[in-house]
Amino acid sequence: MKIAVQREDFDAGAEMRALSRDPRVGAVASFVGVVREIPMTLEHYAGMTEREIGKIVDEAKSRWRVMDCTVIHRLGELKPTDQIVLVAVASAHRADAFAACEFIMDYLKTRAPFWKKEQTAEGTRWVEARASDDAAADRWTEKKEPKRYG
Image 1 (cartoon, rainbow, N blue to C red):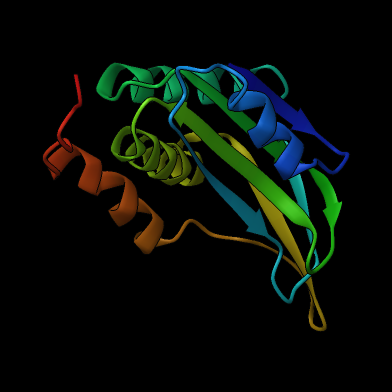
Image 2: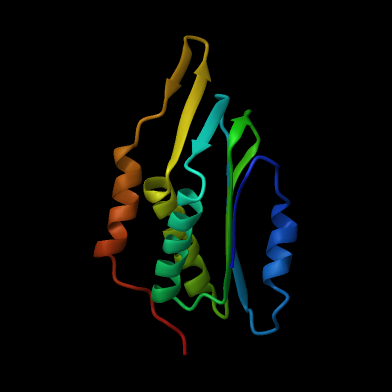
């Protein structure tokens, strides 16, 4: 399991290749988030952020058969088209990899202590939590687990 909070960019392809080196891995599902139109600055609470991400990954591992996982989240000043986050999950089967990847990303948006500040033409503003992000995370408490292979 790799968890990193860093300023530097990442190579998503290299990270996914690293997860697929185990011959038991049959699927690697990934998500790469990219900064849209508005430049932003991301801040975090060092130490706490990594622990919270670890708890999210542990929760995913308790729900699905996750063999390995990489979560990289950038911080600092980011401009449009910059990569901001990578979640990659390795499993023997695609259903577990897809579900765990989506779960981790949904929980990152709502539970990891990051703060985003956008730089607009009108000035800077802190980004408020979105109800749609909370709803995405909440569905995991209501949703039936996908079939586990075994």
